[in-house]
Image (tube, rainbow, N blue to C red; front, top):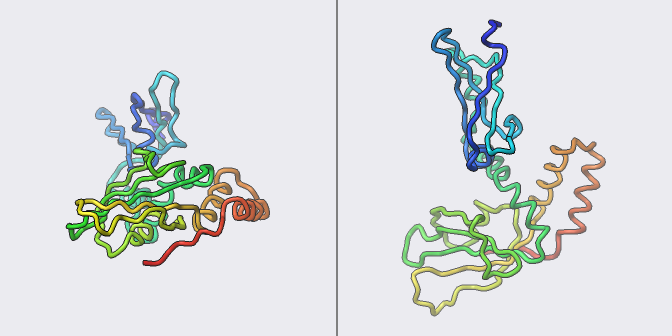
Amino acid sequence: MSSDQARYSTSATSTGSIKTASFRANFTTVLHNPDSGLTLWERVERHLVKEEANGRWSLEVTPYQLLTSDSKELLLESFRRTDPESSRRNRMALDRELIQRVPDEEEVFVTIDEWINKIINYRRACFSFGSPEGEDPETAVHFYLAGFSPGAVFDWLFPWLNYRYHEAPDPEGNGEVAWHIFSVELNEIGIGFLAVEDYFRTGAPPAAMTRSLSRLKRTYLTPISSIGF
């Protein structure tokens, strides 16, 4: 290893980009030394980033991750996969904080917007905590989905929730948008995900993870069943 490979770092001012990089998109930083021709790369991930009190952040770049014509396989391994299994894993990981929040709230609601006269009819979902009227805009998801019922939205975006109607749209309504409001709770997928996440964070042995799962089931899983459409 040459002396100029010993230590490299990059820094920037944090304006929410670290959270974005960790939960909403993939970012890779590339450093190039035009004098030596050395080019290094590193994934921008929360556990690799050091955030400073002054709003700046820094990232130490692994000195042996050279960017060359032979780097393709390693780069592809580091990027998000697009197969269905990986997409489901990624979506659950992106929703981790929201999944963790649901059992901590007394009541949780999901409102789904349906555009009545559009072929691609479902276009937005948003969570409310405590009251269905108090939507949290930070939880809003905008999408385009053609479906026969709101159940398709839960199957696609929120497979970790059990749901039942809190308020159905007025069948006599003449508006362009119908609002489907559901009362929701974690289902076994959500509860199991929290137990596994607890294991990832704490490194608890399997027996402790099993106890954690049992505790979650006793505490949070109440008889609310998802309805079929």
